[in-house]
Amino acid sequence: MKKLLAGMLAAVVTSVSGSLLAAPLPKAAEPEAVGLSSQRLQRLTDAFNADVQSGKIPGAVVMIVRQGKVAYSQSFGFQDRAASSSMRPDSIFRIASMTKPITIVAALMLAEEGKLQLMDPASVYLPQLKNLQVGVEVREGSGERRLMFEPARREVTVQDLMRHTSGMTYGIFGDSLVQRAYREAGTMDDQQTNAQMIDKLAQLPLAFQPGAAFEYGMSNDVVGRIVEVRSGVDLNRFIVERIARPLGMRDTAFLLDAEQTTRLAQAQVAPGAPPLIIGYNPAKPPKWFSGGGGLLSTAEDYARFGQMLLNGGELDGVRLLSRKSVELMTSNHLPPDAGYGAFTLELGLTAPLPQYGQGYGLGVGVRQESGRSMVPGSVGDYYWGGATGPYFWVDPQEKLVAVMMLQASDIQLRTHYRSLLRNLVYQALL
Image (tube, rainbow, N blue to C red):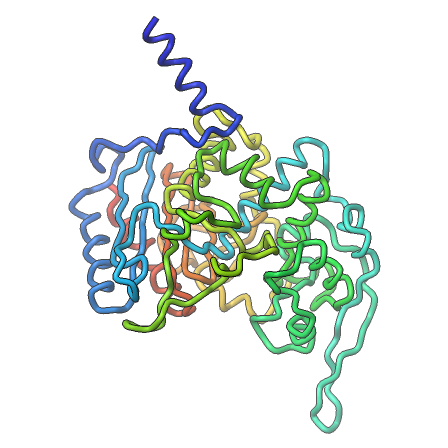
């Protein structure tokens, strides 16, 4: 009877209803039990501790999961150096573009329910996007730039939005005339709603013809609005109720309560500088649930998400996606003749460029070749990061999930730590 009751309790804890009592990821008795060297993992600990002590970063949280068990979990330095508060294992981070894979999972869940199709034009769900124009810069004899417009040769599809070939851009990463128009329209105003964002984008030109180029931008934000339209609830509610709670991701949402706010990690330009507000201001919570960059999360929450993907769409008896949908998400979707926007190189290690042996799936970069990349990994591993510093990857060959939560927005600094982490994780494999 006791065993029966224990089994019933475990079933309740991990039920699809999404109880917040879901058990944490199991811990390995020691790293060696899952094929990692304790001695070599110490190099990772020493490297991050040294950089905290030197003031290079305020702090970080790193988690490594192998064969479904936590082999390494460490918090470093300060959650908020200005307040002298120590980093915690459950410190909450602004994860910026690591929101994107979660938004894509939300959309693929709806696709599995027959509520959307990747082949459909976006206008099937968002009629405002029916007749978009493409902005083409021309330079006058005086050297002055001006924008001409030509009609899109085909409609933007849901797949285009998921793989960043819609032609939509970011106004914050460049100074083309199209990007200036994005800035002037306030496309990233955190007090707008997703519906208002779509109305703005419908009036703006695309930077490229649909399907012609990978242009990192607001495409996944549009996917987030499609999720809202097809599910009938806002994106925050969908992600919390359909993804985060079922997976036991207790601290993943677009909004924080008072207790969670006390665990919010702060970025810092230099030792002694005040904390920066990047992407989420507790004093003025967003109305915009940005499917491309607005979520907050913890290292363990995101490791649970990564483990779900590694498991083929399931974790602890909760299935969000089929195995084939995960395969679709984590395969390269860029056409062989695709061009690349000017900002693509700035994505560093995550840039989906053939010269790096990398492509792009739906919400994640994908390693396609064993060589070319500047960092170790495996063919088929997939990954992404955020402009605020966080980074994750999943390596199916090694049955490995790695998550680094960091609040460092300097592009060179965050690229350094992504490379450092890859090197220090793979050198510890037995």
